[in-house]
Image (cartoon, rainbow, N blue to C red; front, side, top):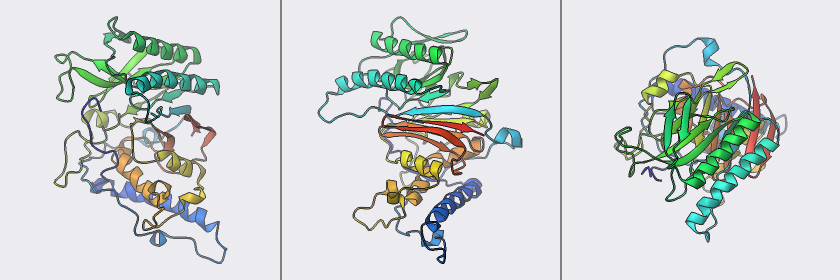
Amino acid sequence: MPDGSNSPEVEGSIGSNKLISRRDILKIAALTTISAVLASKIPSSSKPITSAQLPNSVPEIASTPSPVSSPEKLTSQETEFRGELTMAAVKEVNKPKDENEVEYQLRRVSETIRRIKEIVRQGPVDLILTGEYSFVVEGRSIILNKTQDGFELDDLSDPLLKEAVAALRKIASEKKCDIFAATFTETLDESVSPSEFIVKGERNTALHINKEGRIVGVKRKFLPPDGNLSVERGGKEYKTLLLICGERSAPFLTDDQGNPITVIPDWLKKGAPWSIFLHPQNQADVDFGNFAEFIQSGEPPIEAQPQSSSDKNYNPNSDPRWLLSAFESYYGPFLPYLQEGAPILTADVGIAAIMGSDLRPMNSYSDSIKHPDFSIATIKR
C-alpha cells in the first residue's frame, strides 16, 4: 500500500470487557437467526440447532487486545438509526494476471466511473462508496486547496485525475447523490500535515463529493477527517464515519504476539454516535458480500450451512459462524460508537456489501439490487 500499511485485514477481536455484552448480543442474534433457518429445514419433531451444535473446529481469528472505551451516555433518540437512504457499494475492479499494472490502474479509473454511471441509471440513490485505490494511478496525484466551502483541485493536479474528479462531480450534481470516492494519491506539504505515515509527501485520500457536486470533505488515511463527511437528506444530517482499509488497527502498533491493536482515535469518540459507517478496502480476506446476503435475507444459501474445518473443501467464507467472528473482529470495537442499526458499507475486489450494524435480519431493507459490479439497498427505519 502507498502508505506503508501491510497488516492483514482479518486480525484481532473484541478484547475489551466493556464490549462483551454487545458482542454476546451480536452472537445471540446471529445464532438465533441461523437456528431459526435451520430449524425450518428439519422435521418439526426435531429440536432447532443450538450454538453448542455448531462445529467446534471453526478457525478462530487471532485474539487481539482492544483498548476501547465506551462513549458517553447518549439519549435513546440519538443512539438509534432513523431515516430512509438508498446506498450503493461499488466493487473494486479486478486485475487479470497478465495485465500491465499501470494499464490496469488506468482502466480501473474509467471502469469505476462507468460502474457509478450504471448505478445511477438504476434509479435514485443517496450515497455511493467505491473501493480503496479505485483512483490510484502510479506516478499521478491530486493536490487539494481548501476553500471557504470545501476543497478544489489545484491546477497542478494530474490531468487524468482532474477529469475523473470532474466526471464524479457531474454525476453527483446531476443525480443528487453523495459520492465517497476512495482513494486518490494526494500530494501533501509535510509541513502542513506532518506524519510519519506520509510516504514521500503523499497520502492515500478519499473525497466526499456532495449532491451539489462540491468536494466538501476529505479523509486521509490515519488522519482525522477534514471538512464535512455528513450526508444530508430531507433536512436530516447523517453523520458518516469513513475508515480506509488498515485504519481498523493502529499502524505498526502490536501486542506481545505481534497482532495489531485496535485503537479508537479521539476524533471518532467525540463524533459519536455515527449514523453510517463506510469502509473502503483492498484485498480483504473476508467475503462480507456473502455475510450481508445472509443477514439481509435471514436465510443462508446451502453452502453457508455450518461446516467442519477438517473438510478439505471447507470454505470459511461460507460458514456463518466464521463470518460472524470476522464481523466482530472488523467492526466490533466500533459498534459502541454507531447508532443502533446504522448501515455499514464495505467495498473491495469482489465485494460490495451493505449490512446492518445490529445484525437483525434485514427485512427493513427493500429494493435491493444485486449486480456483478455493485450492490444497492434502501434502508428505511
